[in-house]
View 1 (cartoon, rainbow, N blue to C red):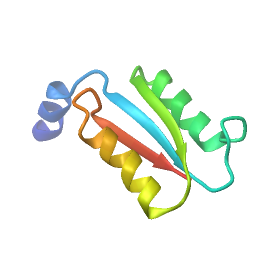
View 2 (cartoon, rainbow, N blue to C red; view 1 turned 120 degrees about the vertical axis):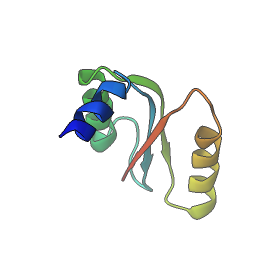
View 3 (cartoon, one colour; view 1 turned 30 degrees about the horizontal axis):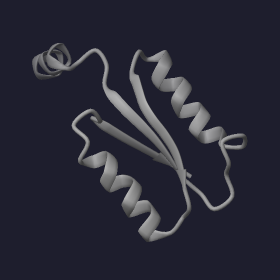
Length: 81
């Protein structure tokens, strides 16, 4: 139990996150899973830095992820699709 309590005490109150939906069919108007993640992040007090939708193609996905992974302002990348 001590390790868990120590870990939680050292954890940040919030993280800087981005949400990426991987889909060939979703649009900003129909991206319900992305909407859910954005709402859950906000409810938990986290900072949404960006949100995007990318086609389900390796090159497109790699490009989107690479841009966010190297950004020091982004701590978490959540994907859905």
